[in-house]
Image (cartoon, rainbow, N blue to C red; front, side):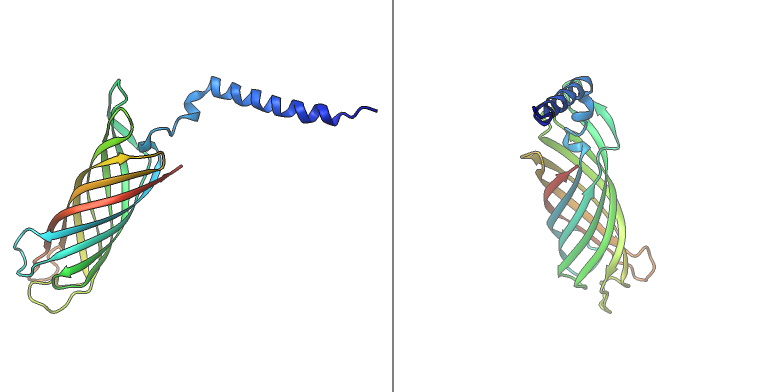
Amino acid sequence: MPSAFPSIRFTQPGAGLSALALCLLSNPASVYAQDHPADRWEVVVEAGYLEKIRHNSPLDYVIAPLQVAWRSPAMFDLWSGESGARLAVRNRVAVVLETYLEGGEDYYFAFAGAPSFELWAADKKSALFFEIGGGAGLTNSKDIPGGQGQDLTFNWFSQLGARYQFNKDRAITAAGYFTHHSNLGMTDPNPGIDALGLNVGMVWQFD
């Protein structure tokens, strides 16, 4: 007696492929909605080297920052061109660990957040970016003239740089990076720290 199972075995895959093809043709936008790197989640590990640029403290601060940052998919575009270029705005949140190679303290552990403005080329591989924001954290303050007067310290930062997408899920970044540390006048004196240098990063993207 012929079995019905062979017909089921061969017709179900064909029906499934037909349904998938129909979905792709009828609604391609949903399939490629996250085709652009700016529309994906990403985590980035950044490392830098900063030196004091303002003489608000007699100490010569040299700082090596290490950051793990998360960027959201684009919230909106400030501009988009017919060629595919776009100026996207994303969110950035980072955990910051700074090691003081020179200065009155040894480390600074903090959180920081900022919008990320990204000007993408039409090829979706390269972009210029600008970020400006701040946060708060803790340092190991010491009773040293010119050092930070307390452990609680606020931070402000900005960076201007470029990124290159060398495959679908990975990118590299390089930027000029500035940071300012202050305790908002909670101690007197309140010398603060202003440091400038370079920051490089490796990006991993995911959906």
